[in-house]
Length: 202
Length: 202
DNA sequence: CTTTTGAGCTTACAACTGTACGCTAATTTA
DNA sequence: TAAATTAGCGTACAGTTGTAAGCTCAAAAG
Image (cartoon, rainbow over all chains, first blue to last red; front, side, top):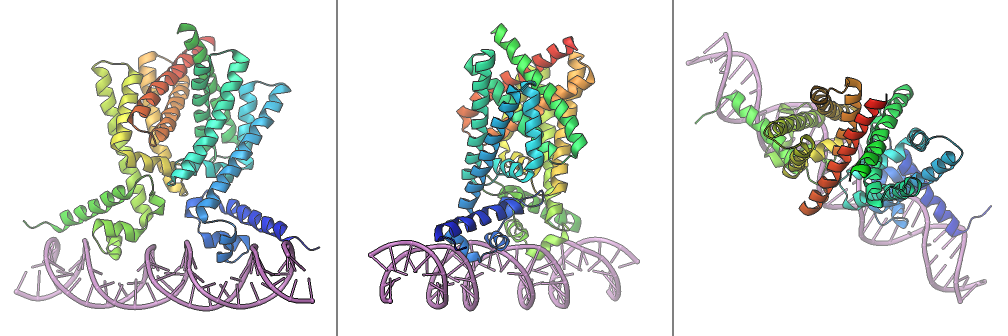
C-alpha cells in the first residue's frame, strides 16, 4: 500500500517524537539528549531531523505540549471516576499515582523541564501546571462554595504538594508508593480542612 | 609569602568548586557542565582537574554537600530570629526567600539535581531535604506537643510546599516574590491549622 | 507525460568532549 | 644534601556534536 507524502511525513514526525519519549528515563533527560541520538533512535539521518523541526528545542516544546495533554486527559478520567463514587481526593490521587506508574517518562519530562535551563520550557510546563490548578480551583468553588481567592490558594498548595510527592514516588517501588499515597491523602486533608477553618475566621 | 603544598592544593580545589558554582545560572545546569569548562573557569588545565576529583560527578556531590550545608546554616539563622520575636512561619519564610535571592544558583543546583539524571545526586539532595524536614518535625513536637507522626506529616508537607514555591520564585522579580511569600504563608497556615484539627478528631 | 517539489540520504567539517601519557619544577621527606 | 613525591601543564587521540551542501528519487502538480 502506497502512502501519500503527507502521511509519511506525519509518520516520521511521530517516530521522532516517540523516539525522544522512549529515550527519556531516570538516567537520561531531554536536555542531555542530542539531535543525532534522537535521529538514530527514530531511524533517520541526523540531517533529516530538520525537515520536521527547526531545532531540538522545537521538539522539546512539542514533547511538553503532548505531556500536558496527557495530563489533562488524566484529569478528565479522574472526574469520571469521582462521579461514579469514591472521595474526590482519594480518587484523584489514585489516578495520579497510576499516571506516574504508567507514564513515568512523561512525568519525568515535566518535572525536569519545570526546573530546567530553558526559559521557554520552564514557562511551558508552568502553564500546564497552572492549567491543572485552575481546573481544581473551579471544581472547588463549584462543589464547596469557597470563595475563589481562597479556593485558588488551596488548589495551588494541593497541586504543588501532589507534584512534589509524585517526584518522590518515581524512585520508589509499588508498596512504598502506596504508603506515600496514604500520607499524601492525609496531608491534602490538612490543606482542605485548614482552608475551611481559615475561611470561617477571616 | 610561600605556601605549603597542601594549602595551595586546597586553594585550587576551592577555585574549582567556586568556578562550578559560578557557572550555574538559569541557563546553565551542572549536568550540562563539562569538565573542560569548569577547568577553564578555575584557571587550570583540563587534566589538572583529576588531581582534585576522580571525575565530574565527585565534584557534583561536593557541590550538593556544600549547598546542603548552606541551607542548614540558614535554618539556624532563622531560629535565632524567631527567638528574638516574630512568628515562626513568617520568619522562616522570610529567611528562606532571602536565601533564594542571595544564593539563587545554590538553590537551583538543589532543585535540578533533585529531579536530575544521577541516582547519587538525587539521593544526596533528598537526604538534605529530609534533614530539613526532620529538624522541622522535632521543632514542631517540642513547641506544639503534636505527636511525632503527625508532626512529621505536617513538616513534610510544609517543606515540599516551600521548596515548590521557591522554585517558582526564582523566575519572578522582587515584588512578585513578596506576593508569593504572602500567599505561601497563608498556605502554610492551612497546613498547621488543618493538622491540628486532624489531631483533635483522630 | 513533463516539471516541480521535498523527504531523506551521504559526505564533510569545525568545534568540542573526556582522558591517557609523560614532562617539569617545586615542595616534602629521609 | 639527595631522593621521592606530586600539582599542574602540554600534547595527543578518538569519539561526539550540530549543521552546511548537494544529491536522489518518488509523489504531486501542471
